[in-house]
Image 1: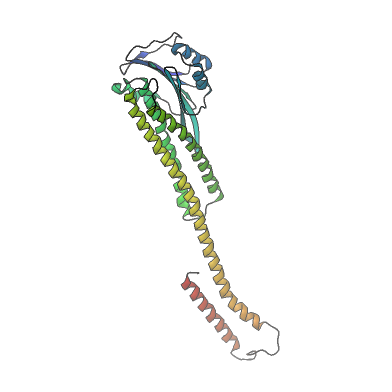
Image 2: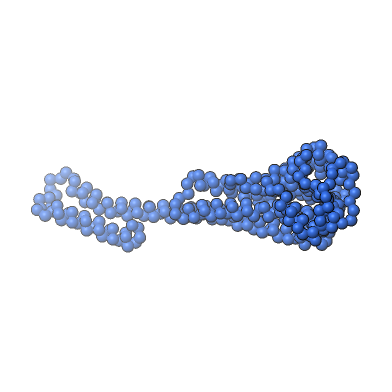
Length: 321
């Protein structure tokens, strides 16, 4: 069995383990069952379908996995799908958690999710007053748990981008660094696409009249909605940082190229002076002024040095050298 946990709670406290015998479950007031599964088989879900009266379309979606975040209503039950994410290296890996919610049961089915609900369950069991709200509060806790897992992903990618941004200020971006930023940018865009449906799911649970969702639980979903918006704001800021890295790199590269061009032009102008003078005296004419002068050679060298020095001083003063 892929059942991770199966417990019944009475008035917020764990009462015992629930045997899954395939018999219809009839809950009483103040009690509910919380069952957690990981990548279950068709037979296992069929077993739970018979026990809790799950809708076949919801069971089919939970079995296949890779669903878009959504909220479906089937009679007096809810079927909620949320997108999970975790970071492996610089790649965001996705999974999903399908949640069946009834008045007296909550069944979570995880696919490709790296974070177990064991810690979450332990935290909730330490607060019987909150857990006594019922399955709708557990639904809020699971969604909040998933959304909180987004923050480390965004912060980790942001740190990597800021590290590259620091390197841009001292050196040119290497081709591998450029490819790296583009890879992270694709990851961020894909992650942003997943946040949109998640925001819609939490918005529906906050504002719509849905079965199994009590009015006293809606403020908790409103808090999760704020968390989603916070992550969306961080992702938008991260995209702007990536754009600024490219813009800063291009501006610095243009500035460095301009400085190099000015230096080359300045040295070319300085070297043009001796080249021009030497070219004149290198012509093969019999009658040239100062050709037989005793001090002609040192005078020409001194003139070259003086002109080159003057040009060097002017270019240095102008900031070209």
